[in-house]
Length: 386
Ligand SMILES: [Zn+2]
Image (cartoon, rainbow, N blue to C red; front, side):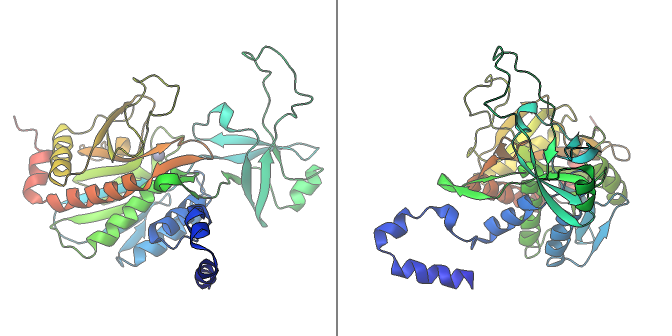
C-alpha cells in the first residue's frame, strides 16, 4: 500500500523534482535493503539475541527445514546431508549494555557489553528492554553552558547515565525496568549517496545478511557439500566467542568461514599501518587477527576463486580484531578457517557505513568458494602431510 502511494506521488511530480528526490526517502523496495534494515534495527546485545534469532530463523526456513539450536541460543540451518561439512558463521549479537544500578533520582548506570569507545557513548539514543516492553532512553551529556571548561586535552570525565524521563527509582520500576535488562543502541538505516548504507550493528548483521543471501543462492544451485549456516550468540566482548564454540562442537565442521565486517582505513586520521581496506574496494579477508591465523591453503584457495570470478579481494591485518573463526578453528582436533569481510566504517558505534557493491561481491565470493569445494579439495586443504 505504501509503495502504491509512493508511485502516485511520483507521477504528480515534475521530472526535475523526481531526479532530486534523495534515495533515503524511498521505501526499501530493494529486497536486500529491506533485509539489512530489518536486521540492523533489531535490538540484540550479547545474551539477548531473541529478536535477531527470530528474523534469522524465519528467513532460514524458506531455504531448509533442518533448523536447530545450540545450548546457548545459536541457530543452525543445514542444507545438504552428504559431503564435506562446511560451517558458515555470523554472530547475531551487537554491542550494547545491561541496566546496572538505578539511582534514587531515576538515572540508570549501565554495564557495557563489548568494546565501546568512550567517545561513542554520551548523547546517544538507546532502548531498554524491560518486563513491560521496550523503553526509549538517552545517554546524558553535560550541557555546554555548564560543562567545566578545562584544558581541552584533559576533559573532565563524565560518568554515563541513561535518562528515560523517570524522576525517581519508583518511576523506573513502573516502566518495568530492573537490573540486568538489556540495553541496545537505536539508529535507523539510511541510504546514503553512491549506494552506501548508514546503520548501527553492521558488526555483525551484515554477516547475517550475507549468510542468508548465500543460503538463498545455494538452495537453487547444487554442490557436493553440506553447509551449516549459523547465527551465533555472545561474540562481542567475549574472548572465547561463546556461540561459535558451542555450535562448532555440534556441527563438527571440516572447514569454517566467519562472515564479518572488515576495517576500512580510508577516513582521515589513523596511521596507514593500522588497517588496509577501503570502502568499496571489494570483499576483504583477514590474514591476521588476535584470535586466529587463517589456514594458508584455505587462503590460497579463496584467492584463486576470487581471481577466477574477477572479484577484487582486499587483505587486512588487525591485531585489535578477533572473531568467531578463532573459536571454530579450535574445535575437536583443529579446523581450517578463514574470515571473509564486508568492509564497514565505524563498526562499534551508532552510525556505521557499508557499500552495497562490497556486500554483493562478498555474497558472490562466498557462493563461488562453496561451489568450488568438494571432498578432494577439502581433503587437500585439511592435509598437513609434507
Ligand atoms: Zn563482529
